[in-house]
Length: 180
Length: 386
Ligand SMILES: [Zn+2]
Image: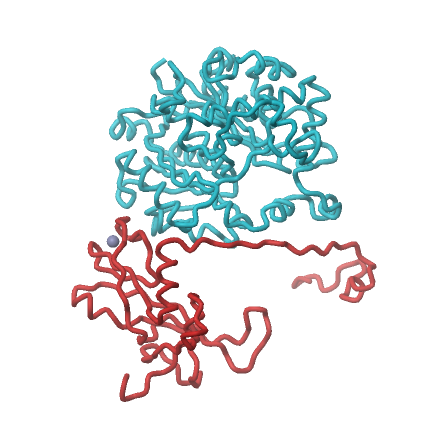
C-alpha cells in the first residue's frame, strides 16, 4: 500500500495458502559447513583463553595493542609478533541492551553486548595511544545500572570445561566497588 | 600498444591442498607482503585503492568485504570486494586506474577451499532454485552435458581430453607452486573414476588453498617505480545465458566475446600469430580445447588435433598452460584468474624458472567462473620487448 493507494486489485495471499500448497514455492536449506583455520594469531589467542589468559598483540612502531592478536598491524603493515597477556578486568567502552535474540525471539531480560577496554595498558607505558577492547557480554548486572566507564571482570568457565573458544569467558560482571 | 596500466608487482602464498598453519587473513597477508616488496611500494603510503574478489558462500561470511582491509594494508582506504573471478578484479583495478583518480591499485584473491566442508553443496546453490535445484544433481553434471555435446559437435575425442590432463600435470612437474604434478598416460586418465560421464574425475581440477596479490600502476607511475612492468594491453569479460535450457552447449560464445573485446583493445588480429603463450581455463580437461577454439587460437574442432601434434606443449608453437594449469597446480576458486595472471607475468618477466618459455612478449590469460556459469574474462599482457 502507498499513501495514495490503499487497495491493490487482485487476491492477497496468507500463510495458510502456502501451507495448503495453493501457491508454488520451493523450500531449500543450504548445507554450508566450514572448518576455518584459526592460524597463528587467533590460534594463539584461543589457546590462551583455554589457560585463562587474554592475549593482545602489540606494535612497537604504532605503540598500539589489539585484542585479539593479529600477525599484521593494520596501521603500519609491519608484522605483529609481540603478544602480551592482559588483565581480565577492564572498563566498559560501549554497550547495548538487546531485546531480540540471535534467532529472532523477543525477550524481557536483555542481553548486554559490550566492548571492554582491558587493563594492561600500564605495561605499555604512558606513551601507549590505543588499547583495543574485547567484544563480549555482561552478566550478573542490573541492565539499568550498566554505564560507559563501568569497571568489570571476566567470569570464566571452570578450567576443565574450557575448550579454547571465546565462550571460555562466560561474560564480564561488575567489579565490586572496593576493587574497581 | 596500450601503455596505460602496468602490473608492477606480484605475490602469492599457499598453493597447497591445505594450509592449516595460517588463517585466510594470514594467507592474504603473506601474498600481499610479497607483492608489495616486488612492486617496491608501501601499501599505507603508496597504494590508493584495493580490490578483492570473494564469494560470501565460499568464505562462509556474509558481506565478506568487511574482513579484507587490515591484512592488505587497506584500513581506512578505498576498498571494495567483487563477487567475480580474479580477472574481473583485475579489470576493475585496470578501470580504476584508467579513471585517472588512482595511480596505484592492488588486487587480491584467495582460496581456503580446504576449510569448506560442503563445497559441492555450496556450488549446488548456484543452480536455479526453482527449475534445476529440485532435480538434486551434483553440479558437475553441467560439465558432463557440455563435454558430451562439445565432443559430439567438434569431433574431439576422449583421448584428446585425457591428453590435456597428461600435458598439464606433466608441465606442473617443473612448477614449484604445483600440487598435482604427475607423469600420467592418457590411459591412466581414462581409467580413473567417472564423474559425470563422459567427464572423468581425473579430468577435473582439484581445489587448493592459496592467495595471489597483484599491484597495478598507471603508465606514469610504472615508469617511476618499475624496471620490468608488464603492460595490460587489453581486457574483456562477458556472460552468456544462465539458462541450462537454452544455452549454447558446444561452443563458448561468451569466451569469444570476451576475447574479441580484449583483442580489440590490444590491437590483435590473429592471436595464433600475435600471442606467444596462454594460461587458460582447464577446470575440466575438455574446457582447454573448447576455450582455445572460442579464443580464436584455432578453429572449432581443431584444438584436439593440434594438441596431439604437440602444438600446445611448452616447446610447441603455442604453449598453453605451461604452468600446469588448474589441473596441475590446483584450482584456486575465485583466485584462479589471478593465478593465471601471475604465471603470465612471471613468463613475461623471464622469471618462470624451470617452466620458462623462450622469447615471449605477449601472453593471453582466460578464466571461467565454473559450473553452472557462463562467465568468462580474458586479459592480454605484454612486456613491450617485442
Ligand atoms: Zn603498527
